[in-house]
Image 1 (tube, rainbow, N blue to C red):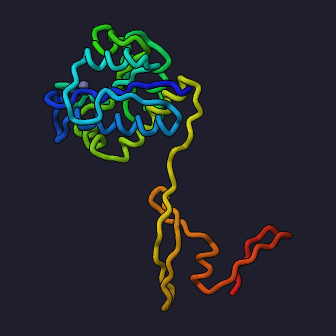
Image 2 (spheres, rainbow, N blue to C red):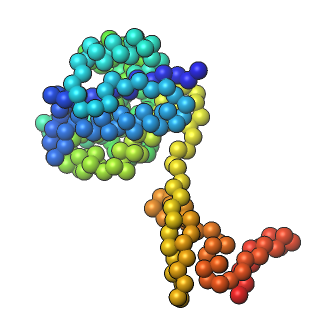
Length: 236
Ligand SMILES: [Zn+2]
């Protein structure tokens, strides 16, 4: 049976969390929670959310959800904010230092190239001291920092960050992280001289990949594979 992970999107509803640079923390944490949850499911985890919409959920209720479902881990997602607008970086908070926190923090730092503020113990945080399972709280960058706020507006940055968090969870539970970048197949029309043809191409990382045979067909060429030389030969 898969491990059950509680994903907690910080704040929500009437509690916006940190606000600044055109951002509200509650919106980023929700986006991140849904991304993390989706990736976790693809890796074979079962996922419980404390919220999947922009609603207020009390801290006690968040813990009750995780405790009553007997979750194996609780991962809360937040963004930082400080009066000093130059404050920046990522930190992972926990009640007692543990590998789940270290693995998540390490993956985020390795991939995102932001300041490593480290793993920190926080005994005072309700969701850390009132959850029965291993619990961590990720502070993914500072909303109050203009540069990091720009990153937090970038969907691809959030995707990368979500992947890092999931990789950390996978490592903690000894689950093989499957590369979950799905290659998307799309139809594209290509024109050569006066002929337009439609082919299935694979879109990956923003590039379209067309099969050599399809390209040759479009260009009125033949493709042969020579088994002796192991060469693919394109002929007129
Ligand atoms: Zn927060």
